[in-house]
Length: 237
Image 1 (tube, helix red, strand yellow):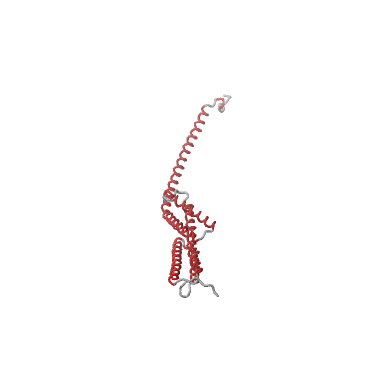
Image 2 (tube, rainbow, N blue to C red):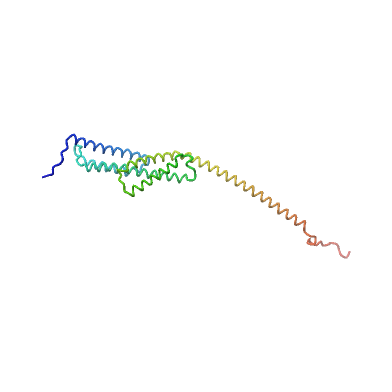
């Protein structure tokens, strides 16, 4: 004899079914839209998220009966979890990609004052450090993707906007670098000519001093030290 199951009225069952399916669709659509947004930022980073969405679709098929009703709530729960995981995977990959772009930008323009052009540069660096710390903390504690997916999503969107700001600033920063390089070359040329002028002037003074010393030495030489004058007159004369 089988154990009796709790009875659920038809309207209640329909409402539960509608709510569960609607929640799955909501989670799937949100993850799919977000994965596409991450892919538009950098194409290859959305692959793990797309895999999770495929798993979600598989578990949904296992959850439904031939008439489209829910026959296995556990499978539906797994499908929803994969949707949430897809959101997490997309955001995680997007954040890492954005952090890489910011780091590359820092290295490329480390010789120029970036904040002169990007007024919120300090905020960008601060947000990047917070994002890096969030990733490290999440992985250390093995946090659930469902709990952190929204935080990750918001962080990615913020970093994506920062990356766009930095990319837009490249042209102005490159102009600034070219201008500073030109000014530096002019400074070097000016210093070089000035140094050469000083060197030639010093050399002229030195040569004049040496010439004067030789002249004074000749004038002060005693007659006894002068070479003997030999007479050409015949002594018999």
